[in-house]
Length: 408
Image (cartoon, rainbow, N blue to C red):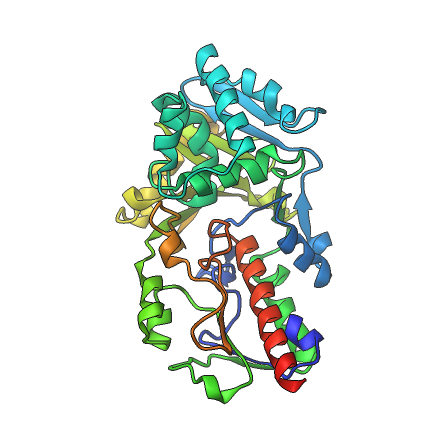
């Protein structure tokens, strides 16, 4: 879109017959239109918000005016992560001091660690959990507080995430501004809010869009500039060079989405975090989010870092999660489960581990007119829609500058 707006002739080749990458909708055999996983964005995701505005889709998304998340712990009770009318980072202090899962000593220690994270960048070559332990965080605090944020944003627990990325998530989302951690999500399907509208935008602006067109090899001489936006493990297949093989070293982690249809609502509001057996489940009331009516109530349950459940049969897994919700939510015990659908994505996001930085290539390549884009590249962000969009802007800018210099 950046390049078409600048007047360049653009060809987009996409292997699948639809666009969206890892953020799209699909239709099940039962006729349900589902997202390939519940995607959210935060107030700090300025590039994503800018894209929605550019596409005229900002009104199709919801963004909190004030951060507030209801957290239900099956063992310690209910809590709310709520934004107070105080300057950052003090806006979270009342919620943190009232967090029921932590002792008084753990709360004070957490405050000190958060202030240290706000003050400086953390090391890339150390695990976030190790850094937290060095700074007084107990295993209980890491599991019930820190991983509540780290796991859904990084798709890995603090033990597997680099301290640099873990610190970035808290600093950018919760500590730098009051609005950075406010939660947003589409009120329409993922394909409807960005990919379909983006393809229409490109075609309206003269781009050639080739859906269902796989690229076998990159030929730098075929165009003034080439931008390669593929998963890291695909890059060595397109560009069998030594430098490209670095990208293949990234580790990827799964996400599982469990869709449950009940005969009634099972919790208040649109979003709820539930901690069951030490595992955080994020619940989204899709019926309310999409403004649907009818006798069925659709709840999407997102499990990040889902390695331990990937091989559980789908029907069995849906039953397990429904049973967990029944134990944690009184309304779920009274509700009747009507049906379910489980979506497993084995390579959902890369793991931003302490050794991942060497595999996250920058936008430039040894070929002067070939550039890389994608959430896995060296954006400084974890694997998010925000990182993907920022990488696209960067690659387009570099390509445009290169072509402009050649023409000059």
